[in-house]
Length: 633
Image (cartoon, rainbow, N blue to C red):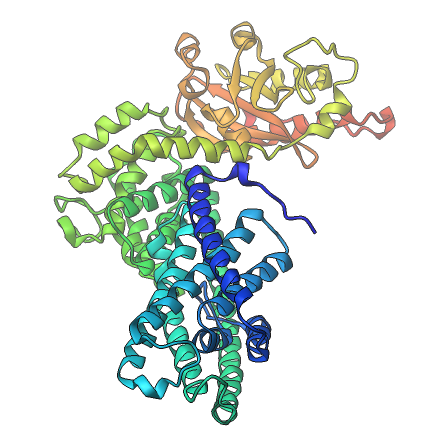
């Protein structure tokens, strides 16, 4: 079958490297072929070649390492000692070709490399052995004993250096990784395997130009026993490794579920949690953290640092205005409470110190323990900086987000008082790169479509295709009864106003499909991107926000119409999200009863829209509940 040649997609350095190796391999293969052509046929040479290729099929993978070991090198080195460089060089080249042809995903450049590299390694190793011993192939090794051991070591060293080194360089260039890091992961195992193979080969051919079958008979059972024992041990280790991986996946899933629980409690998006995690790990790597246990602790700690907020009352956690002294003391307990929760879980990594101390300050003014400077764990110091920056650059119900530049100024102004100066400067240095990564992650997440495309098609029939303000189930789906119902209920709040938002055609923004009379003309052109402002946040998260600043949603119009606070509630049509109902009031004192009434109003509007989307006979339509917001205010 033809090989799939994709050389045009390879990096230029890799192509140059493969060309150099293949050229050198072609030279040694030509030299070996010419020598073999001049020699007579030898049955032992054929036997060793067959054994080399057959035994190579029984290689055993080293557990946890990118390496395999086999007994095929015993026959390669035996062939070197008996017949010189030519026979083993051609043997390993044929073996490399056979391996390439039997691979599932074949590539021409890999096939050429698999032929040339072992041929070059074997040819060079053989020449080194005979150059040191000054012996001819097939000679009795006992006649030159003092030089045999150093010559064997040199032969193995050259073979090992070329075989493993060239392969490591090829993999490193192709994948853009470090050749040394790849090589050191399996070098020790290969070196021991090669030297053991060369030693056994020397014993088997030590007496002259033929294989000593007496030695082979004594050694072969040991090789078979070693192979079986090692295979069994390798299988058990692989099973244990898979078990550890399963436990690790379960651990990660548990962390994710806990993080989702925090998101459900606190009014932040899961995007915030993920950004904090990515940025924290990036800063840790830039600061030279390499310990796997510490990195895993930072990774999980970044997700779970606010888990203690599960114990904070909602009225404190989501309060849109400044906290009182007693409320702030309650909020501060989330750090120690989070550590207490995670201590009971008994995680395998030091997560608890990161969670407990992520609100400590460099000058000792933080909580809960007032640690100073480097007394705070590095992971917690990094997390404190990253979390602050992300909070400043994200919309919150109680304030709009800051630009990156303003947030950088704020973080830098707290350097050496709140935050570790080294961490601050390293994080600021990484921000441009981190923002590019954020954009890539956001683009990937946006590929997942949402909400009510089916309902949109059902309820937007007959609308003009040229109408760029077409919405999913837009104003045509909104019965006059629903409009009147909203106006009537909102009128009970006196100076309150309401906007009913729905998704636009591409569902990336909210547009106004109805508003109460006082603000209707002003808000009609308003479009709020999903995820932005108060209403956009509610649409993105399917969760209500109460007592938020109206400026976050409608900007300067809030001042023009004396709107101070707002309540925003998702509107569902069946199981699908239609849009958002947001009620704006002239004061911050929206009672819990009023908030509950707005929620009931949103439910009733959803029911009215659903009836319009799926028409029924008048006798099937139950009367709408007449809510009285004024009565519960």
